[in-house]
Image 1: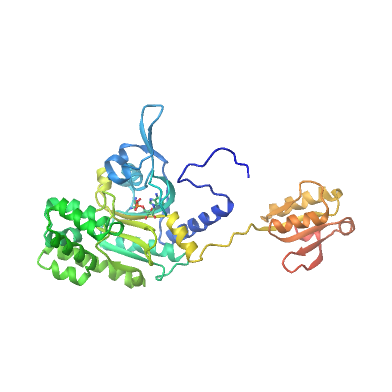
Image 2 (image 1 turned 45 degrees about the horizontal axis):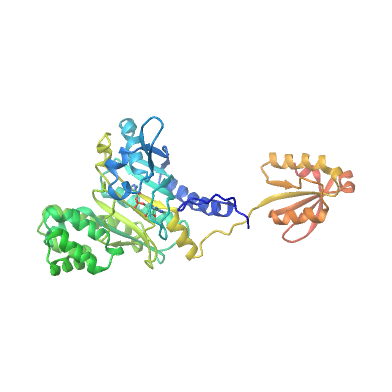
Length: 427
Ligand code: HAM
């Protein structure tokens, strides 16, 4: 097959109609669920100043930025995530707004990632953020939105789970296990990579970066992986502040259980989240089989709005991408059947009925129906073939004898049955 000679950039997608149909199917589900929870849709620009990310997102994302100097000598970047834009937008306008603010967006984002399954250089990401509410009820509400977004697409608790943690609890637990305050950031980084790195490498990294001995490092990793609310409560009982953090996590899980979503939720202190701004409860959604990368990630970020120069408002939210989700839906055979559909195709017995066909087509379109017809003079057989290809449910056949009586033939394409009807009843 001849090609145009221009290759698509690696990591970018084209969306011919059948691919766009899948994207729309996912986005419509996201929008329905957002509205059900009372969230309003917003958007921002795809290009922002570079420093919005260098200061707020953390090293991993900054290393993946599409960035350049524009013609006005500004350092700019294509948005790799939505949260800094949200913080900037609210920084300008939140003071006059009633709280909590419930906003959602479905932006296209750009990250220059290493090519791997489930990661592209552009993706669409559903962002749901609840701003101005510090209580754990807001955390639970946000995770419920994420879970329902996937349920809306037909996925169940057999297909995916939410792994939840709290950075404050992890911090206290690591200190309890002997990690020094100075070693905490390094320990967080190692734990964040636990899923993607062999256990011995993780032990080695902990030893070299935090000064723990190998047996201590083994114990830290083992304890972190197997921690439950009960073991955490017991371990941290003596620390007042940490005790209330564990209780908060328990309340969070309880709230989700009360909503009937308990089957989806598992405590997992191994969830740290790579982004720099999270401050409390964090979560990620994964396929149950553990074959795919994270479908969704989010958590509480109580300081970001203030850091971007706005009103100091607590916030919690998540981002869910369309790429891994599309893979999971395909694997679970939950992709919608693609079919182009047309209400009517108009067939003329000869070109003489052309004027009548155009009048009828336009009348039907005015009434909201989808209508098509041949653009050139063609035999009836060929026109019928086109009607089939275009997915017409009904064909209207305009012939001289019927028209003389003010009637047309209506053919139902599924049953093949035909009947004569009054032309006037159609428009
Ligand atoms: P994130 O974990 O970087 O979080 O991304 C969230 C989700 O977006 C991931 O779980 C994944 O499904 C998808 N995703 C990310 N990068 C790619 C990629 N290169 N290709 C395909 N899919 C990708 C954030 O971006 C946070 N700003 C989310 C958030 C909103 N936190 C609070 N509010």
